[in-house]
Amino acid sequence: MSLVLDASMTLAWQFKRVDPAEILLAEEALAELASVVAFVPAIWYAEVANGLLRGERQGMIPPAQTAFFLNDLSQANIEADTESPPSRQARVLALARTHGLTAYDATYLELALRLSLPLATLDDDLRNAAQGEGVPLLGK
Image (cartoon, rainbow, N blue to C red):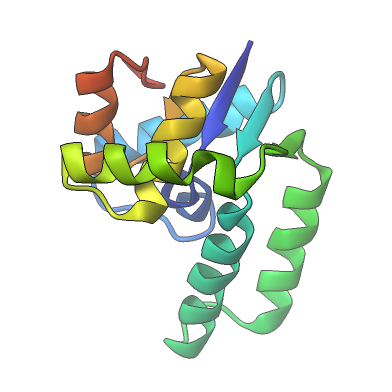
């Protein structure tokens, strides 16, 4: 089995969540990652890097920890979407408009829909939109 992995879930492995349900969901996703292929849109790389950089700037992690985390991620079975962004843009915008999402979040939803895969996210708006579109969620 495979899944679509978003940045909120990925960053939860580095920055622990407060909500016990989110902690359990992040642990479940990390366990899944050991045995599945996680597909990500190209923006995932920038979103994860930005989240880590924000953590550094806020004094939550040192750059060495960022490097260690990125090295661990590079060892995971994570595959970037190869579909051309312009070919998906209209669908991404339509999903964003329909569900009140950012274009970034709609990109994950579009990928999950296109690949018919479950979505691993901690973002409530994205989880609600996925449910509205009939996309299975990790942890449901």
